Image 1 (cartoon, rainbow, N blue to C red):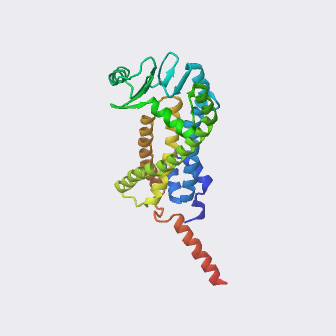
Image 2: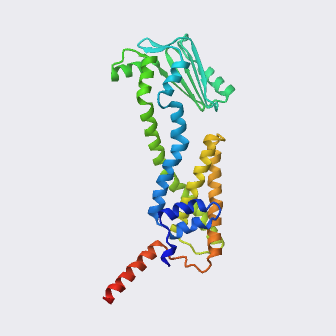
Image 3: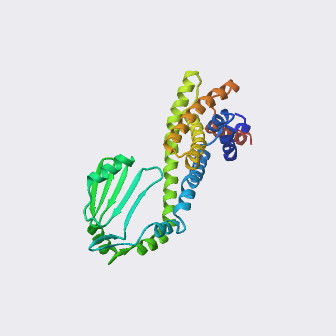
Length: 303
């Protein structure tokens, strides 16, 4: 194989975008690119993806003291002591997607499971929290759990020596931890995203191998797998950006990204072999290295 066919890191990065209009560029990455380049670009794209869809939006909501400010503005004074939980008034909250609901009423000492079930059914909530003076009830997809406020206080008192936990204590703690926790969560997302990319690319690879088999094209697993990685990286990034900032349906957009990736791996295999029918399907970066070693050995023998 001619050295000009080799695809380095920058070439692979370029082909990842060129492949949107010329799918054979993805196959060229898999065929002539190195796995080390694919892994490095996977890490870079995972970092960028979760920076854009996780860290930036959540930092705007919670980082830099913003979460603590929201608590200060929207909640009345509260405290947790050995006598239980106290809240000045009542509090009701639900998220924008109506997935969770929180109700606080410390004028009551007990919580009613039937109330939680009714709230979940009427509002379509998956998770409901009801907090009274003595108990915290958690209702999650039909399952309920009750925790005594006194048990929480005793645990905090034993571990940290708290005599009471007040609203200001919570605000001070959040101000110290909001950004570090977000950074740790971002790093965790990057690692999980990296692993998931490799996993989902395996499924896309199966589709690519099926496409090659249907067209009676001889391809290697490694070539298709590397091609699938580049396809999945770009389309998952695009779909998640849309889901984060335009249409909040991440599960749907994630499945759409997978569907588009399968279409592109079919197109990549077909278009490449249509345009280069005489290309040797077995020769790739590993074979190039063997050829280079053979050339160096021949030159050494001539000396």
